[in-house]
Image (cartoon, rainbow, N blue to C red; front, side, top):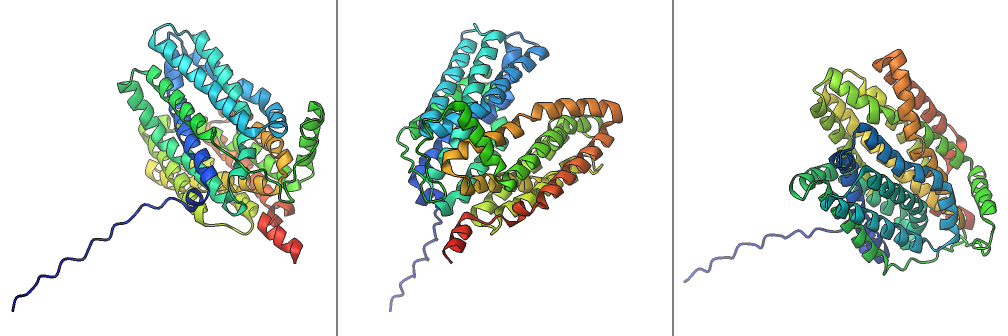
Length: 434
């Protein structure tokens, strides 16, 4: 009798599954693919731009000038851009913005490659880039809900947040590689230009649906109303919702009071009391890991009261000055920054989702433009103010004051009834039909 060997069981092969929002929403898949690469390019340029200015003979003052040149148009145009995004085709605005930024980065890269770039060239191109970026932000916020079903709105925002989080980790590494092995800053500019080209290629076939489900009915006069009237109506939409005005205040407090601890005082403290750049890299890496974990959490967890959870996470996010000034070692602070990262990305994702769920589509871009203005617009002011305050009262006293003010503001926001009681849009619809 012959025995036949039993073949070994097949090893199970695990297929990598895309998040459900990417599998189920082909329009969002197009939008996300292009924007994920574009965000990576942005993170590369955050590292490379100062070195590009220095490479063409600029000095520290020139670096500041180019940075202001890129930021100033964003601050000036944020509110008008929101009006136009509600009046015009948002996809067209987003495509035009990406094409403009592609041309800016391609031109800068070619000027650097040929050795003909000057600080003035980089400043002008940065200003045009900033203007295009100002139009992109509110238009994209209004465009995203048209690419997903309502149930997938939060996962879509979480996945976009995840692209920011991972790019914040990968971007600096890639920037160093491009500068070292791909022609210096020129290679990074050309890489960023390529990401915008890919984004445009993904956006052109995009066919977002018209959001008109009762909550987001289109205003038939939206394209004919006078510009200033539209601007006033956008502010009226903000004021008519106490939860929006309250949370805008919370975002302003976070960006003006808390974030300078990361942008200004954190690196200074690491240099004076720890191991300098090495310690700060470990701490910021901890924050990046926390952001990734928070984004992964919100891909699956859908809290019943999204803005209530966002306000509680804002309290945790506002503790970052205390974490940095705690006097603990770099690894312990990095561990606390993991928690901060979860809170920060959770706050932003659930806040954006709440806006998109509850603000009418005809006014969504205008309302979001106030969000961009009160957040991004206050960062330079906060950085400047904290410098004077620190010089007057000392580093650790400044961090303590920032913690007290930031946490107090966040607790006040969480106590606002309209913030605590805002339901999900689906819950509101169910209540209306019951």
